[in-house]
Amino acid sequence: MSNEKITVLCVDDSALIRSLMTEIINSQPDMRVVATAADPLIARDLVKLHNPDVMTLDVEMPRMDGLDFLEKLMRLRPMPVVMVSSLTERGSEAALRALELGAIDFVTKPRLGIRDGLLAYTELITGKIRVAAAARLLPAKRASSTAKSDAAPNAPMLHNTRLSTEKLIIIGASTGGTEAIREILLPMPPDSPGIMIAQHMPAGFTRSFASRLNNLCRLQVSEAVHGERILPGHVYIAPGEYHLSLRRSGANYVAHVDQAEVVNRHRPSIDVLFDSAAVHAGKNAIGVLLTGMGRDGAEGLLHMHQAGAHTLAQDEASCVVFGMPKEAIALGAADEVAPLNEISKRVMAHLTSHGERSNRV
Image 1 (cartoon, helix red, strand yellow):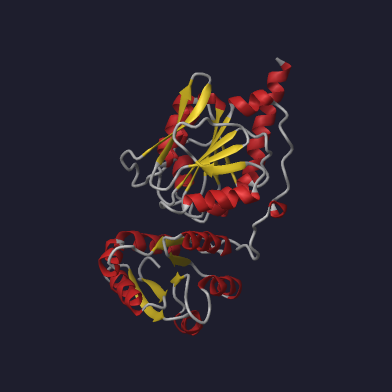
Image 2 (cartoon, helix red, strand yellow):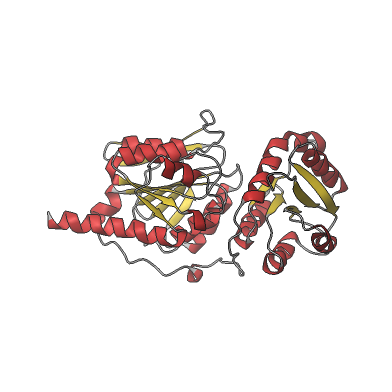
């Protein structure tokens, strides 16, 4: 596809949105809209006719809901899809469900005057289309997972209070990360060390993300709050548009949340979180860098490694986008490179072996 333009099918019930998406995409030298559709039933025929590289898909549409169409599409004709979602509670829930079903990413519809707002999103929208065109399609979740009983096999309890309170697990992810994080957290025991996560996600979506994970996991999952203590059995997710970092307050770890300058074009930035863990937790931290485009987190993982932390990077075969882990591996930042379905086991094995060594001293 390097010598050809990325072909895009835009599906939205708004004629104005379809026109603006076409204008935005066709303004780029490396992509073009081959067709637009007002609803999924029309889109179904256009997919067969044009075989596009990427589809942009609205969530709320007549005749068939965007999520219902996505579920059928990913089962019968898997392809890269970028969802177009409203910035509402319902929109955020739908966007997260779409990622479960196999969508690569999502963008939000602008709140301002539609034309000016959407045109201002040009870089964001076209960037996500480029990522989607190059992404690896992974098996989608067929049924909605909304209960703890749907969880993966559980890891055994640590039964080591010192490990639970002294250690920290620090995770960074971007494109494909919401499902990767879920797979890591599901088996974790309720006495696992505190977990801090920077996932590239816009404001308004991280709260729904945390809530969904909280309903699934044996851990307590929430958006991080500035100044709160990092406790065992809890997961703290960086709020969208805020950096999350680690601080010390006496013997305790605490969360620091701020809106400092964007780092690596991101806020939250994984490097910000990883660098703070290197400084304040050192060898007591375990760093995990997951799927995503770019290099955010690569240098931070190296700094954690140099500070004595145990570090892991997701392997290429299980990544939706092998960007950030690839950069970290190239820097020599990862002690282990592991497939996604092995990472939680590797983390627990490291914690358990550390506890056994301590007991022998």
